[in-house]
Image (cartoon, rainbow, N blue to C red; front, side, top):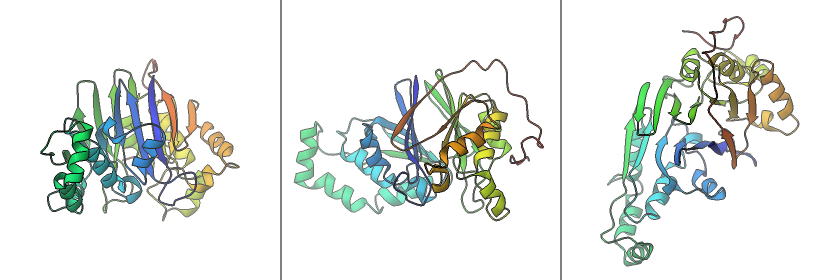
Length: 310
């Protein structure tokens, strides 16, 4: 059965139980990472995973709560390597290439560290003891700026992206769909409910959706508080897309408080009748392929008022 490892299930405000966004899908023996928010590398270690397990990383967008641990992840993966590992392939909307270059390029922010670890006898000795052969190769990362459409096709999985609606025009945001022989899972990233994300998720098995707060909180703050999804918005996207499992992530402090969790899930279930999980960090969840029978019908906008149509 496919797994969803939740490393980060919060937002940009650090609280004891959650901070930032990062997820790893374990399917068909391959582990694919989506976002790399605060302390993702350390959180991986907490659940028995390692950066060298990851060859593919997809960024939904470049707010710091989704990418701030990227340098730590890259450097740890390289520093633990023996020079025979696969290239790290990184995909994301605009700025993905420039961020990567500015961090680990030949004149990047961490070039001094990479240079020292490649050339100092202490680091060379440790590298050889791990099984590496000198000279130590440079960090092996390929970053690509991508947009909507098919982002990557491999032997055993395909990634498709759709535009999400978050903080444009300042940052582009993408939702991703992962299709494999073992099932399909969609990550909304940070977005307000929108038809393009619903279309991306249509017929998928699982939806991993931002769910920052109770819908009533966002309704009170609109139109200023756009670009976010609450309980009913997540439920409506899942229901219209016809998914069977809904995982709530990017959960804010109010919704994640112990006394509010059951109320939040109950609110989601008033619209979506599938399986609902309000995720916690450092937890692993099962998801699996379902027999959908037929595509879900397109819902009436009046029935699903939080989904913006274009």
